[in-house]
Length: 85
Image (tube, rainbow, N blue to C red; front, side, top):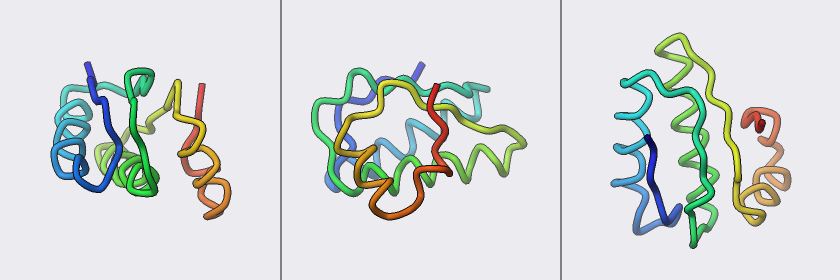
């Protein structure tokens, strides 16, 4: 189960690996309800996780995405690449 409390520049390397491990374990739904801090790195992380999942033949769905990450994804025009339940 993915358990991440930050989607920030400083937390990105650890979060990227945690998400990759979850994908390898077969997870396809990432619940981001525990995220307490997020910046634009959060969008990059979600995209990186989605790319890894697609390479593994899966597609991720994200739930409880922080509002600021949703808004940034929309601003950057990548929100359609990050499906939410």
